[in-house]
Structure formats: structure tokens, C-alpha cells
Length: 312
Image 1 (cartoon, rainbow, N blue to C red):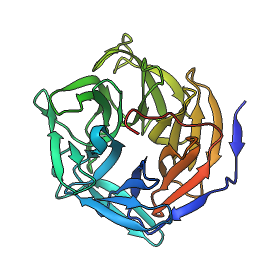
Image 2 (cartoon, rainbow, N blue to C red):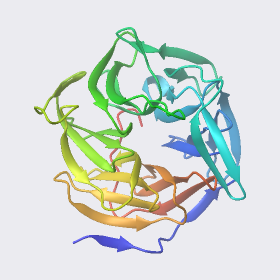
Image 3 (cartoon, one colour):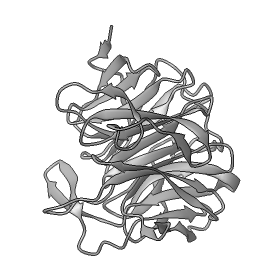
């Protein structure tokens, strides 16, 4: 039976952000995040004060804390934007699209280093989200890019954290590979497919190597959960229990899915585009959620602790 939370006790940490995503709970109690529209990596202090870590070209998307305190960024290369009162949203590939890439940023200096722009000679299109595996690398998703009359396919990749190797692990993911995460035991990879509202899973056999299901699975994944109705999926986080916690667009929810694919809990958000969630605090039960179209970072007490990440 699914538990639905209609009016969660949300605290707005800060507002005035330009389409925030990719929150990362930092060791000093602050939250680092990206602002896609302003092309900025921002630090939000516990009192809500904002400071700029770095400004990038293209558009920063996913963000994760890596080895030696460095921030790793999925840069999607750039979006066009639509804005009306109280609502900012992306609307396709930007005219100045500069190619997708994975970047590494020193939060102390703001220095930016590009690690990957292509895999096997094929350019990355729109890297979106990433999670470290604690074994010298990280998994990342590529959403692709959307244009007026066509779009790129998405995919899932593994990359060495030192910039030495990148592997295309699953392709294509037709509806765009968005949120990505690894189970606590390191044996399962999860990817949220945006346009279909599907959560996919693969068994991990090694760095960049996934066990593939036969046709008709086009990417070799097994479908873990088909979300009901018109729901698009964004980023995800992993709970210490192994549950998968998915930011659910259009319906404006944060959805907890069990490793067996059952929807356990739905927490309603105050807008339709809650895009990302991460966990912090001494007990890992403080959930930080980006409310992107309204430009807010929210926090709330979660019902279970999040997974402690490898470099957190």
C-alpha cells in the first residue's frame, strides 16, 4: 500500500535561484548546487546565504562530491529558457550549445577542468546526473538534447574519476537517461527515464559492465517500475535501506520505490518540478530538495536515512 504525504513540513532554505538542481550536502553543513539558467555553481549556507563557487559555459546539471573534496559536474552544454511570472523552465537546446562534458571543479578556487567530452569518439550530448561507486569511478547519465524537430537518444556511462577512461554501458535509453544511482551493495544500477516515467535497473558486473536483458529490452535493462499517469522522472537518490527515491515531475512529487519496484511513498511538493533530492545532516535524514521552476531550495525531515555516499 502506497503512503501519500499531502502537506509535508517543508522549510525553504533559500530562494531566488535560477533553476536549481544537483544539491550536494557538503561536510561543512552548506549545500552546493547548480543554477542551470545562470550557469553557476552556488554554495548555500545553513542560514540561506548564497555564494558563487564557479561560473561555467554551457549549463551545469548534475553535481557530486568526489575525491579530495572536488566537485564533479555534468555539463549539458546549454538550454534555451522560457520564463513567465513565477515560472522558469528549459525549452530545448540553446543556440550557443557548446557540447556535453564532465567537468571537475575545485570549490576552493573555482578552477574548472574538463575530464570527458566524448566516449569512443562519439560526443557526449547532455550529461545529466552522476554517482560515485566508491571503486575509483562514477556512473553518469546522458539525457541527450532536444531540438524543435528531433532529439538525441540518452544513455548510461561509467567513467574513471581521474579522467583516464569512459565506457558506454547502456544505449539507447530513448526517453532520456536522467537520475542515476547505485544500490548500497554496489550490485545494481538504476536509471530514471524522463519521458516514459520508467525506472530501469541493471545488475552491475564490473566498472562500466552491466548484465543485459535480451530483446525486446533496447538498453538491456529490466523495467523496475512504470510510474502511473502522466509523470516524468528527473533525478534520484538512494536510501540506506536500498529504496530508490525519485524526483517526479508534472505531478510534483518525491516518490519512494522499493528495490522490487513497488511504489511505497509519495510526498507531494508545492510545485510541479521538484527536480533533485539529496540527504545530509548527522543522521542523514535531512532531505534537501530543489524546487526548480520557482527557484527554491527546500529541506525537510525524511522518514528514513539516505545512503552515505563514497566521498561525502
